[in-house]
Amino acid sequence: MPRKIIIDTDPGQDDAVAILLALASPEDLEVLGVVAVAGNVPLPLTARNARIVCELAGRPETKVFAGCDRPMSRPLVTAEHVHGKTGLDGPQLPDPTMPLQEGDGVDFIVETLRAEAPGSVTLCPLGPLTNIATAFTRAPDIVGRVAEVVLMGGAYFEVGNITPAAEFNIYVDPEAADIVFKSGVKITVMPLDVTHKALTSATVVEAFRDMGTEVGRMVAEWTDFFERFDKEKYGSEGAPLHDPCVIAYLIRPELFGGRFVNVEIETQSDLTRGMTVADWWGVTDRPKNAMFMGEVDRDGYFDLLLDRLGRF
Ligand code: RIB
Ligand code: CA
Image 1: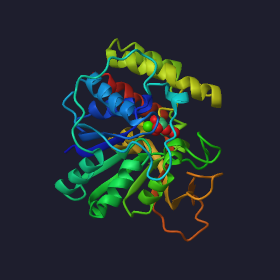
Image 2: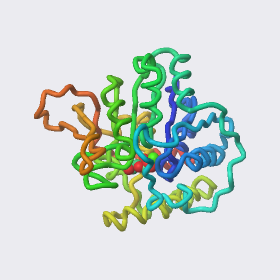
Image 3: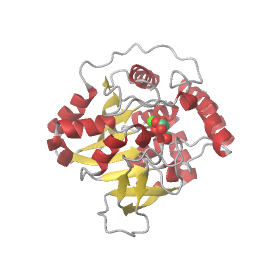
């Protein structure tokens, strides 16, 4: 029985690969809907990009909604320096023809969780947690109905990528992250500690290009564009494909390893705003609230990605 999921996303080249992986895996995942959030680029672009990816996957019937256009209580910070002006820079892309769903994406999250059986829907945030936290605030009754939140965000040993202390998704809306991490919902975190081990390579990118498909070409060109930021900053061989780690975990959890610890979010300090403070060594008696991943079978991860995206 495929696992029901809602993808909450700010595409973003790596978000795009995550959405493709999910749509390529109907035996594992039923995508109930995709909700765009402001993050890498403003909401009109993330809502556009999410539809471009669904059409690229040959799935124009996918329900795509627009959610929140800014963080809960701060101005929006975007990441065009990483993802380009459109958020999907690299290849030239036509505008989508599939419609954006009427209605608010946050209402879609609330209504879906109320309509589906309790514990049957997994939320997969790949961007700032604004939509998720807004849904939990608007409808506290849904928190207990969520099977699990599997999110890309945060960092501990790897420290920050947007400031010395914080990873981008959490940094953009730390209040939202604080709400989610304190909600009591079951949480699995894919932080930079693990996604920075999921690095592409020239071999991997060429394998995508050699697929000879539109999807393979797109993923290769997105990665060519996206990796220049990390290569320059970290001197790494390839780009960390952050967001597909969330989807890969749902399909093959054995590829990942981590520790169940307490994670709290810095919201007060300007210096460390958005830091995910993980009590990895158990030096406090704070309640454990998140499975914080740190290890990945990199080869297994890219084998899965190439196999599944090779289906298009
Ligand atoms: O810090 C990496 C995260 O920020 C990824 O989700 C990327 O898409 C951006 O949203
Ligand atoms: Ca993202």
